[in-house]
Image 1 (cartoon, rainbow, N blue to C red):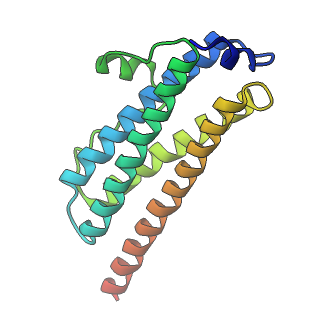
Image 2: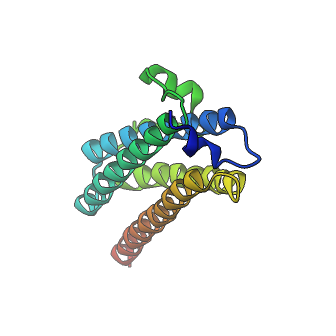
Length: 168
């Protein structure tokens, strides 16, 4: 642990930062897995577009988990070590894609992104002006999550439009 790197924290408990980081670390792993599995089982109209989007989002979530684990270690903590603990420490729920229809998968993915946006927004407020390094990481991830929500919503809306035009 680099003491100078921790000394830049102002008015914030390093253990609380590590605990929050571990919770979002669990979220990211569950999001990665959810996107990975969804990309494998999704079916229906425009599934190829959904697969491309879900696969890209999975890669982003894995990158987020890496950024977070690196920060946990920088602060002298240890990332959650066992996958079974992801479910008990995560902020956001994992939704197994039992119905692989493209619309249902996109709805589940949207709920996940909306949860992540809320969590990262709160985390950004918590670290602002107190832990600039974590704040920067959280802000970067928040921007990605907002983009993910927009991408998923746009695809969902496009499919809705196609379905509506087929009904006419």
